[in-house]
Length: 280
Image 1 (cartoon, rainbow, N blue to C red):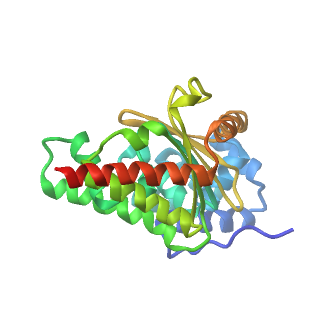
Image 2 (cartoon, one colour):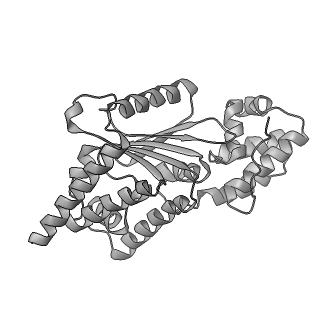
Image 3 (cartoon, rainbow, N blue to C red):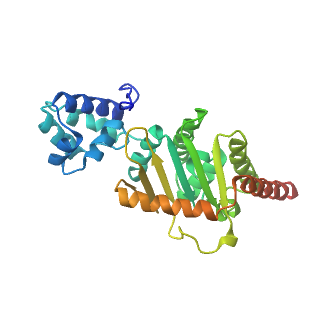
């Protein structure tokens, strides 16, 4: 059986804390469950901290210092984790993406951030914040495109998205922007870098009418689910909850068009947008 994934402490503050936490716990001859008890968290949560898939909070850092006799190490370094380019409600999920081996997402309204083009992302952020300065919009777009760099690896993570047909039809940024955005997704799929499916309007009622969901799996930590809403989001690690969202995703996949047919539809809609733009 393979051992725990080796973290690179220089890759991020979270990786540093995770590597140090694992080292100190093992040196103290404590199991993850043993260490989780004084923090009032599960052993699997400790494993997620060690694997870098969860963010350490200030109160947890203090208890870890006390439990492991770390002389304030975790409290001193935990502050670095608060420095993020992303909103508080999404920062932890964005960091988890970086170490995920599989990401499965149902998007009901917008192209997922990992698949957005610069022009599409700019249109979305401008819609979110119509009075924001260009400098702020530039920063938000830059951070979103930086997230997408995880797709530069040819195989990891496996990214599998189900797009509601509304995503294709909602004209975000204009016809030219939409044509390029959809062709970008098709291109990645044709290169076998992502799996894309479309949930057509003809399906009617389906298992995720309440909203989108993102599922993330990891090499050496339990899976997570991320659900969001207007200005809010939450990572879920309860096994029963994650399993319920996983079943929801499987039902969506069953209802969606097969990948090949989905790409044909996306290409057709992109052509329609391109034709509309030519007519202007």
